[in-house]
Amino acid sequence: MTFILLLVLTIIGGVLAGEHFHSYLLGLGVASTAVGACYWITFRSSHYPQFALFLLLLGVVAKIAVTAAGVLLGLKHALITSPLVFSLSYLFFLFASTYCYFRYREYWLTRLRHKDLQ
Image: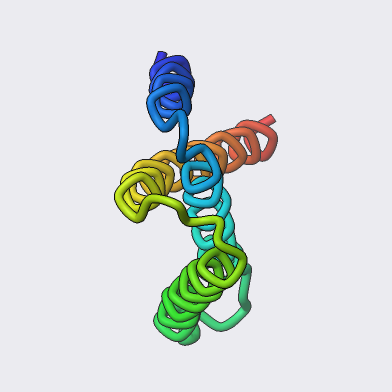
């Protein structure tokens, strides 16, 4: 149900963005890439639990770097036609992609636990 709600909100946001669709898509791309980079770095499997805080901080730095690079490239190539649409799109997709990544992780962890129990 939540995925359907996210899909409906995404489509409504795209339609409402209308003239500033490039800003909307750039917000989607930058947010998804930033969260993906943070997720990939932070949840690396490590044999040393002492690295957990370091990996978390490194993930946050990667997220900020990807966001800054995406905004700079968007401004350089004039893809951000409306800063408001970009900001709202980035904020929405930041939460939506974070939710999707954690649901995906939860799904795989549950699947691995069931596999170990059998």
